[in-house]
Amino acid sequence: MKVTKGKGAAKKDSKEALKPVDDRKIGKRKAPVKADKSSTRKGKKEKLAKKDPNKPKRPPSAFFVFLEEFRKTFKKENPNVKAVSAVGKAGGGKWKSMSEAEKAPYEAKAAKRKSEYEKIMNAYNKKQESMADDGDEESDRSKSEVDEDEESGQDEEEEEEDDDD
Image (cartoon, rainbow, N blue to C red; front, side):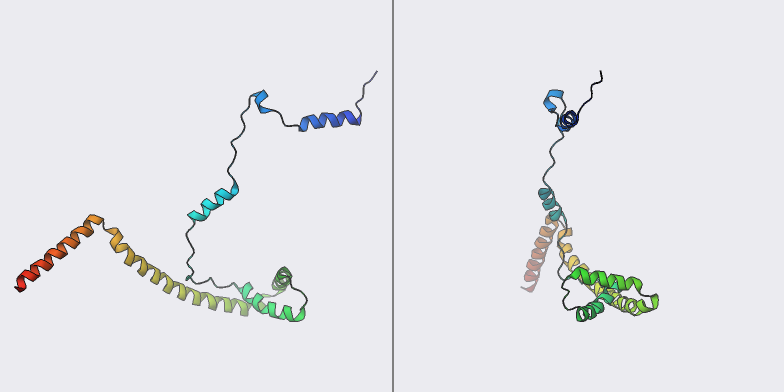
């Protein structure tokens, strides 16, 4: 006589297979609990350098120059569409369908903005270097060297006063 398992027996077997095994009975160690993601994020934020609010913004690419103009026309044609994603999708589709000749004016504008940005960035970097040089002069010398300079400066002043008498 054949013994067949019914659907109920199959469900019981699968439930047992899905149950978590008690690790203490088997003697396995559990993996160490990972730290919360929120605590690791705080650490990363502290490590990152603070952004300089005076640093010039990067120039837009040719696509974003095109999108500035496209947004205006899209808003006029579709005043009821408020979703930013819809404007982006429509602009992206039109940009892909444009030929190189149609893209050329936007690429020229982007190149012009990039050259202006590079000039501004060079001036910004020079300013940053000069500010860093001013602060580094004292920090490069140890305190004892600074103290020695101050003492020698006072000695020289006393000698000058003596010479005047």
